[in-house]
Amino acid sequence: MYIAVRLRGHAGVKGDIEETMLLLGLKTPNTCVIIPENVVNRGMLNKVKDYVAWGEVDEKTAVTFGVKEKDAKTILHFSPPSKGFRSLKLHYPKGDLGYRGKAIGEFVRTFGKFDHKNGV
Image 1 (cartoon, rainbow, N blue to C red):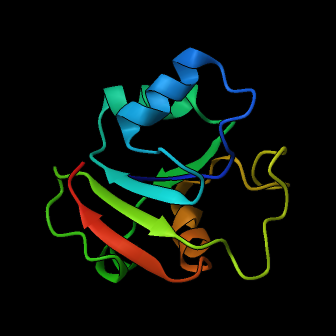
Image 2: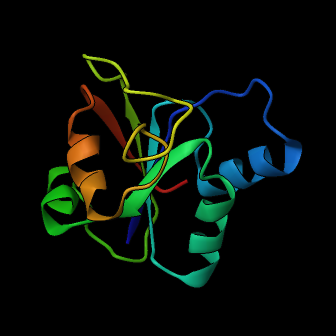
Image 3: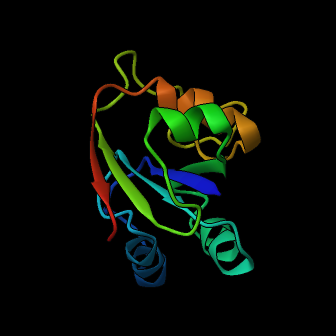
């Protein structure tokens, strides 16, 4: 399963990229979505890599956020991290954007409190 967090807002985003983020369920900044791991979702995440941080979910992260079904989409809404982001213009490892692999679990756990919503 993949986990993606939208880090950047709507200003200056091309229409097709914004549409892809809406299809993923990433409507606003600090929204997190856990989606099934497949070729289609990976392609969509690669398309929006300049606006989100994403990677593979580990078991600890799945348990922390209450993911029960591997084929269901789980949407979480976070408050921003208490110590802020490193950079919203640079890619991982220098900044926060892009593919993080298994390190996404630790990144997501640094966020503040969240509201849990299942489904779309």
